[in-house]
Image (tube, rainbow, N blue to C red; front, top):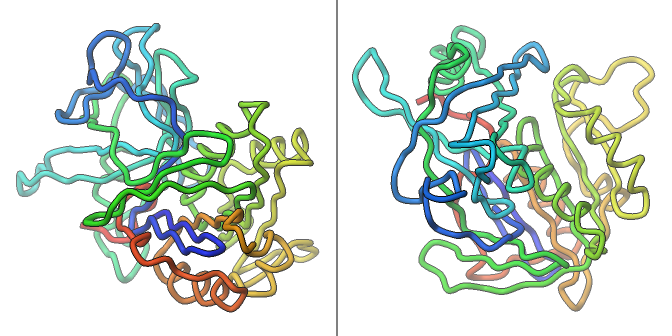
Length: 316
């Protein structure tokens, strides 16, 4: 669920699993030539690597059609996964944002949290898709289709938003605030890396990353490496529900004061936008009210629904 809040506009790109942006021109040749994805048809991609990066999170890497093939995914856009549930024969679909894109040839990687059965009382069966992914062996395949999404980031602060049933809105910003929860970090990282990879793009980024515990912080080493390498463009701040002793960052829910201290405030010319990606309660009850208190307002026609983050809030 990626939500975007702009200083004169709250851009919400969100739902449960979540959140879309930054654009290289998409050549819509799904699975043909040197582009891997097909926007209209599911294609099978072979698993070539599976890495445990935390107690419940995996990095899955799939081969593209050839070593020279690029993914064909505009930055911030996302990809649908599909498999047939052997218990009832029904198709299970989820949407994920990869942590690699068109800059990587021949393969694509996803960081996905595995929701095991019997762990969360509200979802006793766990996450069907994430458990299926975790059961895959090297050489097995996953059906994927894409790209999909309502936002495309063109670079240098320019992007467009196409909410469902609404006209296209073109926007520009010089500063981006980001609030991510759990695996909602993956769409953010995709955008962060693309901005910083283009040394002519001087957009600044401030990220608040919320998790339950320190062990739940995904991609921490990579995020902190980026913050160290680009101190003038990227700021990183954490908050934890259960912080350890001696924790030097924030604790608890995302608050107005936390946002005010770690994300640039709204500007009259719309040059600050805030992207949010995480569990719906965090977005609805913490982030949006805090941002409104800080002067961010919702632009009619900018609210949309999409699945762009690697979060399974609901086990279907």
